[in-house]
Image 1 (cartoon, rainbow, N blue to C red):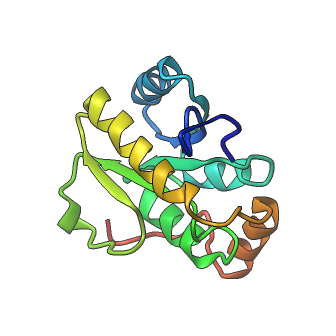
Image 2 (cartoon, rainbow, N blue to C red; image 1 turned 90 degrees about the vertical axis):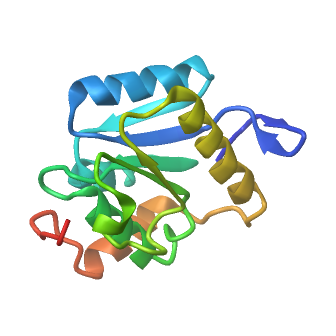
Length: 159
């Protein structure tokens, strides 16, 4: 979790950015690193779940439409895990929120194109909420739980 605090709120965080479009992922990473955050990128939900074996992020920012494991499937996998379910998730998409009807699967929805100020504000909001929760247990164990609950990289969703 965040290692630097300012008035009880994180000054910087480790953020897992999941986006299949390399240019869009790079832009998101630039916005976040300019704010002092440490960013790890993943090209799809399957790669993101692999990253969670070794990474303990403070938040996840994910696109919806991606190959292998889309953003909604990733959200479902995270929320299905007892150890990951409280991980803050920001979903970004060019689709309208009601098109994937995913209530409770994520914390914040942002519509593309992403405005840098709104992204930073949204991330600050989910990190502030997360700071009030107990420290999260090991995420590596939770990835194993996700796999046991049947979230497979080849699964499809009604996105």
